[in-house]
Image: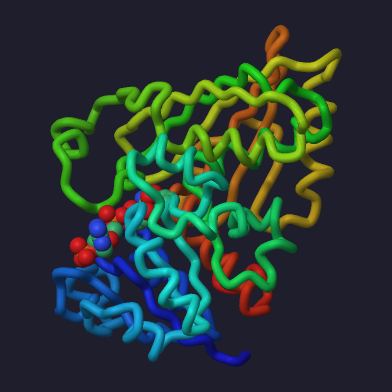
Amino acid sequence: MKKTKIAILGATGYTALELMKLLLRHEAAEIVALTSRQEDRPVCLVHPSLTGRLDLPLENLTPEQVADRAECVFSCLPHTATAAVAPALLQRGVKVIDFGADYRLNSAEVFRKWYGVEHPDAGRLGHVPYGLPELFREKIRGASLVANPGCYPTSSILPLTPLIKAGMIEPEDIIIDSKSGVSGAGRKPSLKNLYPECNEAISAYAVGTHRHLPEIEQVIGAGSGKKVSVFFTPHLTPMDRGILTTTYSKVTGEVAEEEALEELRRFYAGEPFVQVVDALPSTKDVIYTNRCHITVRRVGARLLTISVIDNLIKGASGAAVQNFNILFDYPETTALL
Ligand SMILES: NC(=O)c1ccc[n+]([C@@H]2O[C@H](COP(=O)([O-])OP(=O)(O)OC[C@H]3O[C@@H](n4cnc5c(N)ncnc54)[C@H](OP(=O)(O)O)[C@@H]3O)[C@@H](O)[C@H]2O)c1
C-alpha cells in the first residue's frame, strides 16, 4: 500500500489520542506532524498510553508548515479553528478531515444562529460532503474536505434516516433523548466535568439548544421534501465514553416493529460498521469499536429506535479513519476491524 503522510491538529485532545491509536494500526498511515498551541514535548509524555508507540514532538505549526509535510490533515480542533486554517491547506493540495462543526451545516446563517459567530470560510458551506460513509460514500470519494459528523448526530441519523426514507415515520415531531460519557466534552477542564460533579450523577444539559440539533435536522430531512422537527435532549452520564440514543417518532401507518427492523437490515446490508440487532443494545457492546448497534421497538403510535456508539470512535476518530480510507482509496475497513 502506498503510504500517506498525515498531520493531526489539536493532538493533545481526546479525539486525537483515539485517532493516533487507530492510525498506528494502519499500514498506509504515516504520522508526520502533530500540533499543539502550548505543548512542545513528545506526544507520549502528554498521552502516556502512547509510550513506546509514538514519540513525535508536539509543535506549534502554521498551516503552510503543515502543508509542506503532510498530504492529509485530521483537524481535531474546536469549532471555527479549522475554518481559519483549512483554506490555506486546501490551496496547497492537502486533504482535510474536520472533526468539528465548521463545514457540517449548509447555511452561514444557520451557523451564525447556533454558533454565535460569523463563519470564517462561509463560501464553502453547502459544498462539503457530510462524512457519514453509510449515507454519503460517493460524495466523500474524490472530495478534498470532509465534514466529520458530530457524535450525537451519528447516533441519531443512522437509525432515523432509513425509516424516514422508507416513509415509515414522520420527520416531524421526533423526540431524541441521548446519553453520553464525559469524554464527549473533550479534555479541557470544566467544573461540570470534574469527578465529584459528574460521578454517580446523571443530568440533562443544553435542553432544546444543543448545537447538534440543526445538524440532525439538516441530514435526516435532506430530500424528504417534508418539514422536519426534532426535540433533542442530551444527558451527561457517569461513563468515560459511549452514547446511547433513544428516538421517538410518529409512525405513518400500521408499521410493525419487525417491518422497521427489516427495513434497517435491508438498508445497512453489507455495511461493516452498522449492526441491526434484536436485543436492546448497551454502550458496552460497542465501546472501543467503530460500530453502531441499532434496534427498534413499536410502542403505541410511536416507533422507538435505540442505538449505541463510542463517541470517540464511530462518533469521531473511527469515522474519520473511514473517511480517510475512502479519500485515499484504501479498503474502507483498514485499521477499524
Ligand atoms: N469528544 C468527542 O466525543 C467528540 C466527538 C465528535 C466530534 N468532536 C469534535 O472534535 C473536536 C475535538 O474534540 P476533542 O474532544 O478532542 O477536544 P479536546 O480534547 O478539547 O481537544 C482539542 C484540542 O484542540 C486544541 N485547541 C483548543 N482550542 C483551540 C483553538 N482555539 N485553536 C487551536 N487549537 C485549539 C487544544 O490543544 P492545545 O491546547 O494543546 O493547542 C485541545 O487539546 C471538536 O471540534 C469536537 O467538537 C468531539
